[in-house]
Length: 116
Image (spheres, rainbow, N blue to C red):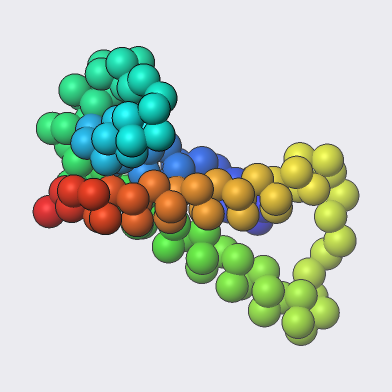
């Protein structure tokens, strides 16, 4: 279940980056004094699909939440098997960091310029 959660978290992060790369991320970076010229290509492509990328990000993050909740319930019931592989041990923290960054990018997008 950990690799699926990590894949959904990565998909949500990439979709949230696509949503933010159009308008919010270049503006926020320029406020910090960082050039955002490298985001022009991504922003140009993502601007057309901003609503779809937002829906994909929300679906992926909801999938991470469901998988995390199911794993939490399994651990509470004592039916969850211990982690055996290194990939599973890395996927947990990666998922958490990815979800936090994705939620931050979506919040930044709605704070600066909502896509809807």
